[in-house]
Length: 233
Image (cartoon, rainbow, N blue to C red; front, side, top):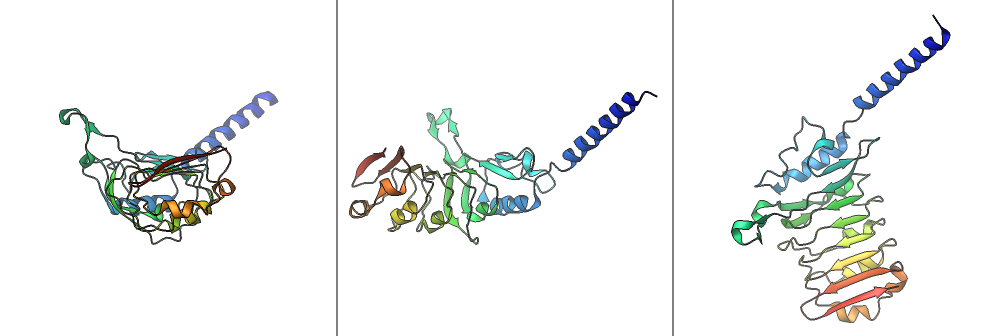
């Protein structure tokens, strides 16, 4: 048999073995799956949005979950609810969305980069985690209108954050919010519209936002007493 044919066949067999091995290893990380299932336990899901989230299935195939093509680690979780009911004059129907508790153990997924839980009906946020992510750069919890957060201290431990949207979340009891966001070295865009931040004005006079936020950073906040938009170039 021609030596070139032998070499070609060996290369073909090796490529097929490598392809099979990659397919065998493509299932999501067990630790990531455990964290996602733990989050699901605290969620009320009346519309069955998380019906694909089952132990026996690959979590990379679950709704809202995106895994890295090679490592199969969870890098993107997007469960934003934008359900509108035409029978109700296109008003937002929160009963079709996720409710319950946001467990910050989600941030223990060590490769998570993007988290979007916006436009749902979450009521509480809890954590039995140290929350020390170095990969998460985008977080959107906006328009969870019944969500009440008393402290944003956990945000200050996510040094990689570039984008934060907490619009229309009740932060009335959070008096140290400015400190927690200005210690973030990579922050590019911050949205705090409609958060009932009544103690903004005294703090802003002492905040060196231009020093802490990157150039071309958009910083937006609105309260019942004060509305302003500051663009730092």
